[in-house]
Length: 520
Image 1 (spheres, helix red, strand yellow):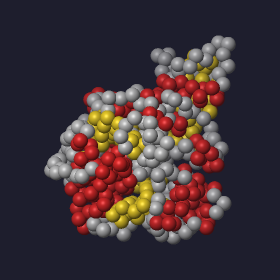
Image 2 (image 1 turned 60 degrees about the horizontal axis):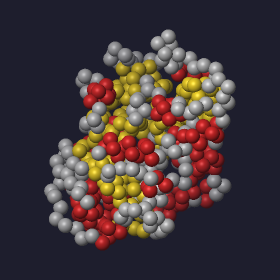
Image 3 (image 1 turned 135 degrees about the vertical axis):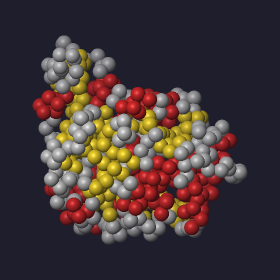
Image 4 (image 1 turned 90 degrees about the horizontal axis):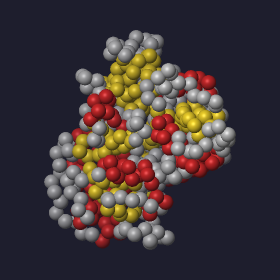
């Protein structure tokens, strides 16, 4: 089904019902529908039409959702952009996606520095940002009358380009059709037994695939209510749940762990919650027990998936959260097939390690402008190669043990070591660089740079961080720097990162108190 047809059906069933809570504001389904039609006219007045790419670099705000729906009404393609990225990273995505227009929050420092051929529109609070040099999307929507809109595009038309990191260090754009995104929403709403009575808190960045496709579109499909938290903060997270009687929410494990450090955690009324969903890394038994004890519930569900798959994959349901702690489950979500295979494609027996592969109607069409990477991502019979290595236990539960690619997952954010290495290598004090992930009890992993200094140089860690500050999003910048004489390489020059992980990849101490500083 086309996503606009899906949304309009919900709006016709529940026109006066609250669709969205945002701070003190509330929007009904009919109001968001009308505003999205006005947004479509604003975009069309600036040359956007069917197939054009509309980028959105925003916090979790009503006008992100209004912009997405407005673009989709025109048959345009939505390109969500990570609001933590720096100037060169944003410019690459706008250029690579051939974005016709970009809606960007004026509170972002990068907003005034981007160089692009795309038309720029600001969103958010314009106070103190009057000199940005481009029009304000929110105001234009409020002042513009909706014109006659085109008929919805077909189900197989492109709906999104979702960017994820690639092995070359540059992001890759995953192409998702309306049908694929609808499938993701349908599967997730079914897996959670969602109804129109549910209230879903979107606290993680909405430009991520799961908050957008799984939980936002899943809620819209069922006629439920969304609660947007502009940006995650532990106290704001708890307050939003209590104030709006939230029933469902999703976050990285750190988003559930960080509130436990608040002295008044127990004073917040969380009794409305029926399910806490987490992803981006498993929870060990001790941490799962701690969460259940402090939140006074056993209703924690882990989901595993990736952007290329919708994101859909497997789930570890509440009844197994302690018994199989650390697992990503044994059951795939409805409509998803999963297998773990050896290098020769044969099924992996219990106790052995193989690659997780998945297949679903929600899978991406391919990578934008990268036929070679698209071919490499799939087996000849259509299974997506996740790149994750997993062990299967005697009961059929999957445990991720390593990655074929050098992906680092920190606080639910994906960091590719190659991208960080490419940014750090030009520093004049460095002769060689390798970036690895070190296990961390709260973040999943923390980014570590192993560096070889040039003769006579003594690199300073703070200077290296400053060197990267305008090149990489903050969560990608290494927290620790380990100095070595040489990096282990094969005779052909290939870096042997497994030796680095074994030698210096010891787990880091818990640093929950630094949550806000690190992921600001």
